[in-house]
Amino acid sequence: MKGNELQFDRTCHVLYSKPCKRQIQGKIALHYPPEQREEIWERVQRQYIGYLSDWRTDLGGTKNFHNGVGGTYDCIALMSYYTVCKTVTCLAEIEEMEGELFLPAFRKMTFVDCNKPFWKRTIYQAFASSKKKCDRWGDYQMSVAPYEKDKPIYYEFTACPVAEFAKRHDLLEVMPALCNPDYAGMELIHARLVRTMTCSNGCKCDYTICGDRDEYAKAHPEYIDEAGYRRNKA
Image (cartoon, rainbow, N blue to C red; front, side, top):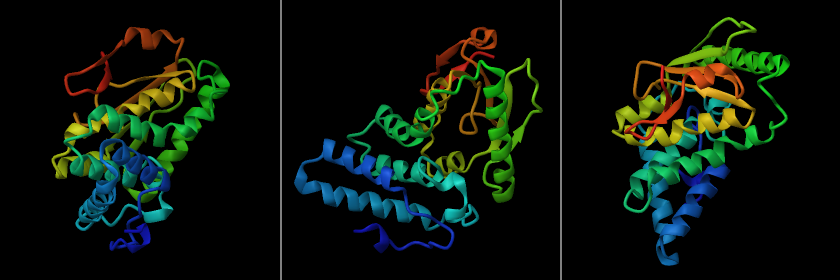
């Protein structure tokens, strides 16, 4: 089926992005013989619209920046792929796919260096701007600590639609693959993310961000927990 033929409420939901479609179809081609690929892709599409059939209708549709490439709806599409193709895929593959969707914007910003005061403040301002957009839509409940030049940036989410979706559909096992690319994104701008929990394995998703030469990161070493999350020691 073509994307414009899928039956879901487009006044409140959006179709997965074109880059997401390419990622999923590419992995289907990797795992299945040619004669099965169209059938598998259609099953993924049907799973996607099935998931949207009883999903929240208040996430802003195309107006909400969180619903773009690598965002909320692409994550639902990746979970649709995982559901249909669980016997052939793995969490490492899902993380790779989300990274290919989420990270291109950061790869264009390799000139940014969060060790430098100018860029640290600029990144903080970007997070503060994101909070205003979150407040508008009420999807990600976000708070941002006041800026302090000698301390790391701190913000947190206490609600995340992707984590909410995963909990509802018993897909929490996929969440490390969708959360971990946050670390890679920060590394591309010479920063370090220090995070002890997420909305999917705790009560909040905490983001402490410092330069990659900052002693703060060294004091909170990273590890991978038993579920596959990249995390830091408190």
